[in-house]
Image (cartoon, rainbow, N blue to C red):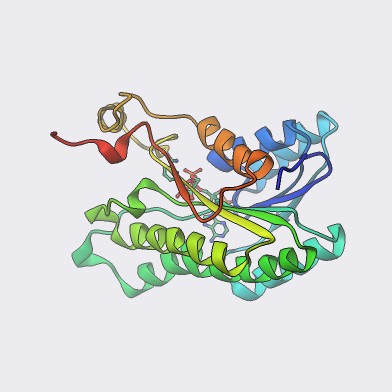
Length: 249
Ligand SMILES: NC(=O)c1ccc[n+]([C@@H]2O[C@H](COP(=O)([O-])OP(=O)(O)OC[C@H]3O[C@@H](n4cnc5c(N)ncnc54)[C@H](OP(=O)(O)O)[C@@H]3O)[C@@H](O)[C@H]2O)c1
């Protein structure tokens, strides 16, 4: 269903910094009432709060560790008690770190799966139930091009992203017909903060467009899926400058 964002409650995880903050700003500028989740980025959340309230935009911030399921339940209860409904959910937060296959520990595996996959299965269960009762809602899950192209040095991460791509399809079926569920699969749009110039050049050369994207490329696609798309559900849209088609052919 087409959605005028004005006064719509949109909850985003990890929305206080980097790509999440770009999505928060983009949707807020288009009238959404953003409910911005963060965990450790307290200062970034304070700064974004000051920025958006300074522009007279309605905004709320909630804190939770996605690794802690009961904390996540409490966060959703708090949001629903305060705001009554959630019209859109953007599952953006994730963790990403190097995990060479032969040295991955059980602790690392559990953490990556808990934050990137398990949390979203249950967050979508909690909020999906409410959206079905409301008979409307949009869910967007941020996946990764690596969902289809496993990276050997990051297999636990890419496995969680493949799981999320599957979750998109499963939820689209489960929550239909009232709720549309889609994924956005970014290529590099904001390199890690410690990436060297040489690494960035490598990312650029891996795309057909010979550049990395921007966080706004993701924000625009999320906006399209939440505000404009009426007949799209269960897809995972690559926003990757053609990364997935690279190769020798
Ligand atoms: N950047 C890219 O080029 C790129 C490429 C492909 C896919 N993606 C995907 O796009 C999304 C955003 O990317 P990004 O680079 O902006 O991500 P990021 O900087 O790695 O972090 C995103 C957010 O995840 C939150 N987070 C991490 N662990 C958490 C936990 N235990 N509990 C709650 N929140 C937690 C962080 O919140 P706090 O800081 O508040 O703790 C942070 O704001 C991710 O899903 C990522 O996988 C990004």
